[in-house]
Figure (cartoon, rainbow, N blue to C red):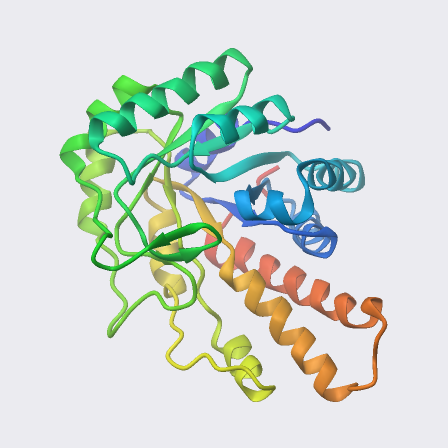
Length: 309
């Protein structure tokens, strides 16, 4: 099966009250763990690549690894650019075989965000590629995306209709209280479902995207701290909140930090128990299995997209 776009996936997800998992990938083991989990759970899948991942692993290597996953799994997979910062990187990914790109113009003014997003949409649609835009700014750090709490801003529902109409985007990332990284909340976790409800009312049937949606599983944070890490106060989005969002207009939920934590915690544990080991296969194999288990849990218990193909 070739790579697909998210159009049909999102239509089914919206109507079915579930969300598609969009998992960030950086290397072979991460891709294997994610796709093996999705194959076993018969789940559609979005594999997304950040600008940092392209710099680290190389566009061509990542593309070929995803193509290998298609052969091995025969899953419907979208290859998506996460947080494209300008037209040039979006164009490079479109020309390079991606089926979906995100143009993140949220740091710009409303008018400039519309201009740059429209530019990407026109080029992408001419090449059969779909586009995710963003309104509002999430706090936190993810690769080259760094936004302080002072700079963050909730999405304004009164702007969404004009933004979607003038840009022609296929989906919209919004800010309702999630944030990038492992430190998402100070105090009681809270998402602005009132904003989501109003956006859903204004854009009926339109797919919404939630970034910064890792739950920061305590098991892995504790494991990291046990084996020499230092992550006091790490706190993610409660899974019941994500399930609620998936039952509403949210059709795509991004997950990155949970994958990093699962992999890092497992590798730290392996080296603590096998300090003399120097064979990458021995510590990457359990890391891959931890990612697989994490993704299966998300697919079944959070996203609800199992048995949807």
